[in-house]
Structure formats: structure tokens, C-alpha cells
Image 1 (cartoon, rainbow, N blue to C red):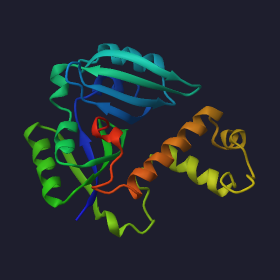
Image 2 (cartoon, rainbow, N blue to C red):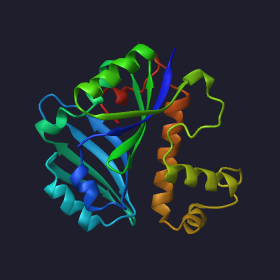
Image 3 (tube, rainbow, N blue to C red):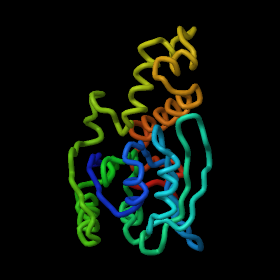
Image 4 (cartoon, rainbow, N blue to C red):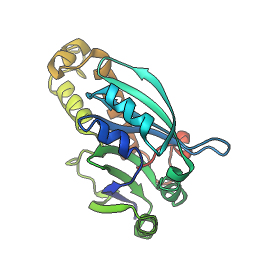
Length: 228
């Protein structure tokens, strides 16, 4: 039976950078394991002190190289290459080999609130044992059968994505014809038009991954990206 696990995972990855800008909201966008290059981690950072955060990235012992892939009014998309020592603490290698599917991961304190779909209880247990062997703090918060989803859960949406999607729906953005435009949503959420567009895009992708794809139906891009 396919299971969705919500859990808190505390790892040393990016810890120095995150402590340098504690108010920063960070959500994983993509993680890629590459044979001839260091492991690459891409994430969105939102609504924080970017100068302090980037200073923290420069001092972070788990990070080798940093690139800014996109820069908007109140958020930036970073890609970092991890050190060899940091790569050993990435759980991507474990859950990907077990056939699990990443849904979302958002920074909380020194760790990450993560949601992953596992093929069965045995694969989840193997993942938990992997975390224990590597000294990673794993705290299971919720576990439920994917087929039992009744619409009452966020399905991996971050708080910002959920708020944007709910506001857009309540104000008629998805109606035909639309009752509001992106500019109206931006004013309501007090963020930029581009930020609203990006949050809605990512929210839609998250819902598609969590509700449509099953074990035998995985997007090709998931073969090489994303982690918790």
C-alpha cells in the first residue's frame, strides 16, 4: 500500500546559512545527483535578509559553490553544490533507491518539514533506519494511505503556496471569466506579481505530483531530482 509520510528531518545541510538568516523561508525546488559533479541542491529563499543569508552560505561547511538562478522582488532561487561530507548526509540516495516520490520540503528551525510518498511500510522503515545510521533526527508526524486522501490535507503545499492558492480561488482567479488578475492577488498577499505567479505554479505542480502520479506513473524529471 502506497503511503504518504509527513516528517521532520534535522540534518547539518545548510545549517550555518539558515542560522545566519533565521527569518528566511526556504523551500526545496530540486535536488540532483550527478555522477561526475557534486550533488546539486536548488531551493527558493523568500522574505528574509538575503545579504546575511548569502554570507551564511559562504561560511557554510556543507556548501562548495553557490549560484543565484533567479532573483525576484522578495525571493531568490539558489543552486548550491554540496561538499563530499555533506553529500553523505543527503537522504535523496536512500528514498530514491527505495522507489519513493518527493512531494515537498520546507525549512523549519534547524531542519525540514518534509513529505514523501513511499511504496509501502517496509520502504519507509528502511528509510528511517538509514536516517538513524547517519545520525539524522527523524520525527514522523503523520502517516496515511495515499488512496485514502479525502481532500482535507495540504498535500505537501507550503504555507505560502497554500495561502496563494486559497486566495486565488476565493477571489475568483480561476473562474471564467476571471474576477481578479495577478496584480490583485499580489496586492492582497502583499508580494510581487511574479511571486504570486511562481507560487501558483509551484502549488499546482505539487498538487499534481501528490494526487495524479502513482508508483507506476512518475514524471521523468523525478528520476534525478528533489529530496527532503
